[in-house]
Image (cartoon, rainbow over the protein chains, first blue to last red):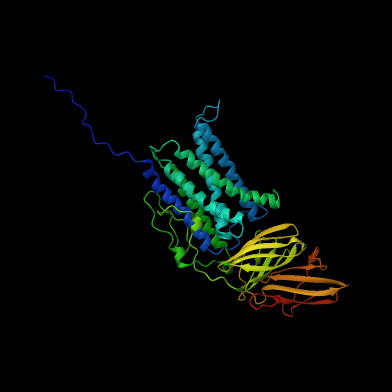
Length: 193
Length: 249
C-alpha cells in the first residue's frame, strides 16, 4: 500500500503588514530628524562663520554651488525614476538606470549635508524674512523626508504609489530650498565662483 | 536588499554631518563659541534599533534619530530667552567682505554697514519682538532678528547685499570695540565718518563726502585712545553709537 499523498500542512499565515504600519515608524523617525534639526537651528547661537572650502569667493558661493549640484543630481533622480517606472515614452529602462538613480541620489544627499551643516552652524534657523523662514522649515523637512525614503526603500509589500510620492516630496522640498537660497544668491550677487 | 544600502547612505550622510559640525566648532575662534543650553544637549534620545545614531560628544546637539510624533518643525519650541533691550552687536558680514554694527536701545536701533570703502550706510528704525527693520538714505536697509546674543539678517547698501550673523560686542577682548561716528564740515560740505571696531581691534571705516551720503571713501584711521581721526588738518571727534549707553540715540 502506498502512503496517502501527504498534503502540505497549511501554516497559519503571518498577517500582512498594512501600509500604514509599515510607514509609521519611518515617518516618526523622519519627523524626529526634521524636528531635531529645527531645534538645533533655534537653540544654537549662529556663529556667522563655519568651516570653509577654499577656491570660492565666499561661503555663500560655496553653499550655492554645492546646493545647485545637489539639485542637478536630484533632477537626474526624477528623470531616472521616470524611466524606471516606464513613464518616458519610447525609452526602455536600461540595466544601469537603477544604479544611476541610486548613485545620483547618494551624491545629491552628500552634497547637501555640508551645505546644511554650514547653514545651521553659521546662520541657524531664522525667520526674519519669508525667504529665510521657508528655507529654514523646508531645510529641516528635506532631511526628514530623505530619512523616510531611505527607511522605506528596503520594505517589501508597499503599494506602488508610496515610493514615487515620497521621492517627489524629497525633490520638491529640495527645489524650494534651492530657490530660497542658491537661486536668491545667484540672482542677488551674480553667478560667480 | 541583502545589505541595507539606503541605511548605509543615511548613516554615511549623518557621519559626514557630524565630522563637519565638529570641524566647524574647532575652527570657530573661542570668542565666537556658541553656548549650548543643557536642554539642547539632551535632545539626542536613544534611537530605534533600525537606525543607530552616530556616536555623539556630550557637548554638541546633533541631528538625532528616534521616534516622536509627526509634526512640522516650524512648531519647534523656542527656548526661554530674554531679548536684550540694550545691546550692541558688531561683526563681519557673511563672506567677510565688510562689517556691520547694530546698536539696540529699547525699541530703537541704529545700524551701520561698511566695507571700508565705498559701500556703507547708516540706518535707523524700530525693534519689535526681536525683529529689526531699519532704513537709511539711498535705499540702505536692514532686516534682522535678535536671538540669544546674536543678530542675524540681511543688509543692503549701494546695491550690495550682505547676510550677517554677528554677536554682542564683547568688551573683554577689546575695550574699544563698537561703533563710532564723527561729523564735520569741510569746505562747506557736511562729512560723516563711521567706524566699526571689531572684537580683535580691526577697524573698518568709511567717510561720506557730503550730506547725501551717495559717495563714500575709506575713513582715516581712528585713534581709539583719543577718539580722534584726521583728514588733512581737519580733526574729527568720534562719538560712540551704543545701545547699551544710549550714546548716539
